[in-house]
Image (cartoon, rainbow, N blue to C red; front, top):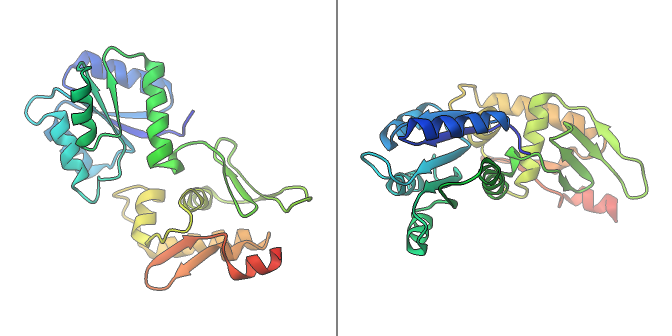
Length: 244
């Protein structure tokens, strides 16, 4: 199972697009439909999807050409892409993967196989969108139960009370540790692309997150990187000293 994701279906056959949308809805996702590559690009300008399902054979620009175009754009280069096709030759598969697709699924396929492929690309590309447990430095965040815990060796775990946004923020930071995330990047990944919120809003929620983590002496795991943004780390000097 994964958390609800916005999945853009780029398919020119209405019956196939409808079937895909129904199966994705049943699995708890939010399908968005486009009948051509050009329509998909218009949709993406307004809403950045979490996953793209692209049919190889599209009118106008092909699915492979669309995948290649998305990979050259900084805003869309990290979106997981699965190509849908009736082609099964190895050379075709290689061509699709070389264009930047993360995976390739040959028609006909079962809904169960498609959902498994979606879970796999999300785990690789966007772990913050899966419901898998993330653990680091005694902290654990479990999206499936919406619980954040801190546990010292030999002690009982302590639950950390977090608001919904602080929970999503902590989960994202822990899913991408030791990387510096700018405020604008955090707005896109935690609040959603094209959500018009001032960047200082990130600072407010980081402050709330640190206040919650301070109750278990973990506030310093969320570091400010001057002039760049924020980073989650388990390598803090004070944390290392307390563990020594």
